[in-house]
Amino acid sequence: MTSREGSQLRRHDPAEVDRLLDPIVELYSEVYAEPPYNGGPLFSRERFLDRTNRQKDNDGFTLVTAHTGSELDGFAFGFPFPAGGWWRGATTPQPPTEILHVPKFAVIELVVRKTRRGHGLGHFLMNALLDGRPEPYAMLLAEPDAPARTMYQRWGWQQVAAVQPADDAPWLAALVIPLPH
Image (cartoon, rainbow, N blue to C red; front, side, top):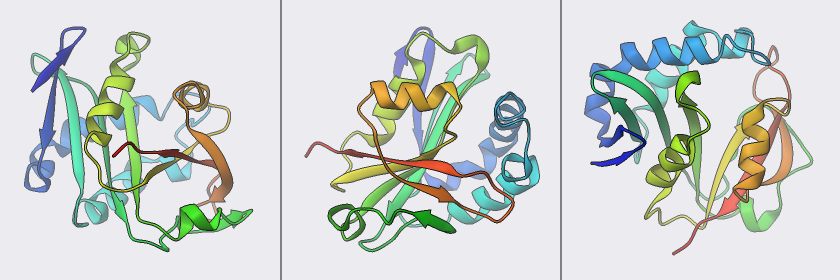
């Protein structure tokens, strides 16, 4: 366990996700009600719960949380995609073969409480999630108009495609970053 700006970071195994799901869902719902997400269909509480309940059972699922006392300040989670694996839905253009044909770690969520943003907690969570990963790349989807998109770019993430993960979802920026070994 490490700390940043008063928040204690914890890495959790998949068995702990069910115990933490209520506060995670509450924080997710709070953050994704903000513009540009505005609680759209892809970002609804129900869809998040459905996705997360499926994703947590993937081999290599990893969850990192940040707490101040008993309050959840933020969380990040993801899991590995095998070589050839890519996001569901439509993609344009196709990702580069050097990325598509190798294993990748998919960052599914990075969520930080509004009052805790701007102090490096998101970067700290991301680094804790990706630290020691064996895959050559990490990937994520970002809403193009969200402040997080600009933040990822500052951190070195590069857009390789646009993805519409569901018919009722917006087009999202597919970003990748090489991971150190």
